[in-house]
Length: 402
Image (cartoon, rainbow, N blue to C red; front, top):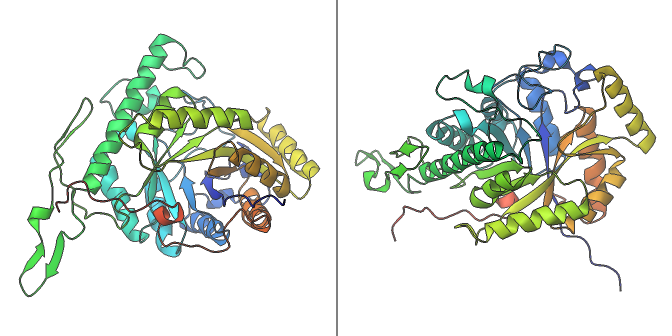
């Protein structure tokens, strides 16, 4: 019997400067002079939409980029500096019609009230295509920008030590509270709270605005929000995880998690761990997408992709490594890998183009057609909201009365 076609995959791209390789800005066509222009970002998101991708994520941080996970590196031969991700998202949202737009926000040093209204506003600007990627900051130099707290020294690769585990658990518990406050603020206006009746002089029904009265270890927030409930009700909450502590955040709080397996067996084990944790949470009955993250070097033949990576490594002065698997090859070979890992339980992928625009175009114009030929990707956008594209229902408002 012929085998059944694969289930359709979800695809996103992670946009960061000139690309994920530190020497990407030096490639022909990389446009380093345009990195801080609205037109540059609008072009990237438009290209991703041309490829029918589910969404883009936009990287951000509260300190300069660094090759050291925990501290500034002082380098001047790599891209440093970036625009605010939420503001970039708001700029490009009206220029697109279908693709989801998911900026990164740093929960560690940003008040949830600010994030809730910013992302709600983005959901209005995009007519229901907003999400957010919640990020935790472990860098002491970033804490020094704010002067309200200290972060203990956390060294990458030392997560197994008791002190590091405790510090990371505290930061991720705070992020979980942050997400909970944001979600409650989105619900603090019922969907029909706005009356807008000029004849009666009533703009809102005050009985349909709710105090959230959140009191926890990390936040005390009264509410309600100043922004009406977003078009999606709840914009899509996403987070990246590499180990058990962030996996718990994904399981407890997210609609979608990004994970970084390096082979199918590891993907299967990560999916099992997160789904087991999810089953113990209050969100156990709610869908959860798990996307695999990969950095991609894509060319028409494997040798060209490998040569390009080697050339970039030479410019950077060291071999490129990443938390995620680094794939070097053709779009057809990448399609093989994605479909193999899909059988391990991943429902989609967030691809990190090593060089923009080269690898972004290879995704939209090479990988996407290949997946479509195999019946594994959409032929057209089938929904008008990001939740709709991901098959997530619009949630009921927790404060609304029957």
